Length: 285
Image (cartoon, rainbow, N blue to C red; front, side, top):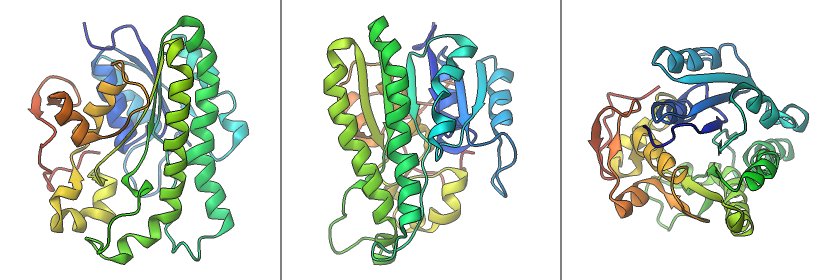
């Protein structure tokens, strides 16, 4: 029996990277997973599609299905939970992983880009949580996890990697700061109903294959600013299987505090703990 045997989860932004890895880990623990992405087809030069992610889980013996939704659109996301529940039944777990980033100086970030980031990074998680909550409250059980970012907080001066690595992510960080505040407030509202709501962020960079393309050089200079994807995934699993309320957790610190080992995405091997180093030659897709 896995930690999530019999439970049903929806993970957004799950065709590749962090979302796909979380879906693989949850499926390995017995959950039936519904993966969501903006489309089923190829993502430009980025490896992985929604169908390929679903197939990789089913090929490993898991239960998985896919649903498309462009989270910028309130119409497309408006029935996403209902569509997800049509596959395996009512949701026990909602993981809001999908995010949109537009890099520009805070003095120059356009209204169009700000609106898109707020739609995907704040309004979509709020909408999906509200869609899932009625059923979770009725059943007296549920877990909602919102993926955040260390960019929600202004780093101390002098900046470790220079101003050019800090200023362009301010608007993105602001959307994640709003998500964290919403997470904490919602968590305390629904805790008495048996629904556990938390947020999770990496210490800085989760070195997926995609992230390695734009942040690999930072990880080389500052390896303590990066973490293997398995570290974040293990912390996510702990937060959607435990009894935590209103945590805004940093993945490495959370795993270290809870003395939880980090396992491979198939759950078969213990790889280390919260201090597990980054292997720059092995970026997880």
